[in-house]
Image (cartoon, rainbow, N blue to C red; front, side):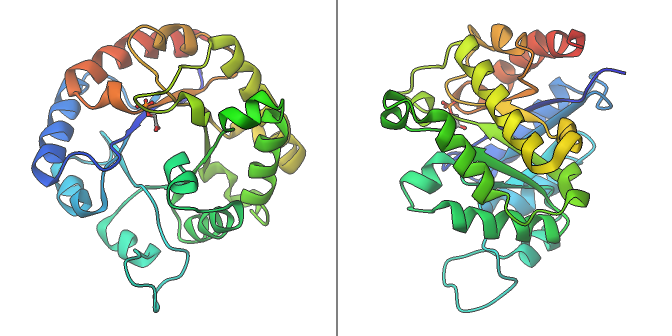
Length: 261
Ligand code: PGA
């Protein structure tokens, strides 16, 4: 049996309730013939859309995630959203440590660690994003950076929970409108580094942790990234925000992923 393929998108601070519901309904419809036993399709829209989004499509079709979460169940944390609130809506995934959370909102590896532990303890899948900045890359610190982000971010994670742990490698310099996509070779090399660190932390059990690539994935580079041995899925921004476009990327890459050993 081939490995599970992971394809998903973070909608960032785009699409309100109406647009999110339309997008999800269309995406679910366009992909309804694809057997989900081999494909995990997921969308991470903004908080305010989550309740309507969950009602619009079943999670057997599209898993839904939150873009962030506070680690405490409740408290004096104005403006934050707790794991209990997200459980109530029926969300599957918590995205943690996206580059914009780290570099625009000032989160650090210790914050991400508390969120990872809380997400796993509350039964969610935790999607931890890691990636080096351009400066770290130029100083030849990429591997050390990834290692630090993983070792702190995953500190204290119990082996029994790693079946619900996903990692996204998103080099900061590759993300967004000014991003330069990583070459397939570079991305694969860093995925191998990440897998090595995961193996150091969890032993052979780490084989089951999917490592997804994100950062300017587009219709031109998606297939070559999918071919790389250490890339288990794609985590896409702009190129997935139109259901037709995302459907094309899914159909182009899913068979490539499936064929890999
Ligand atoms: P992008 O976004 O595909 O638009 O570069 C990726 C991300 O931020 O996850």
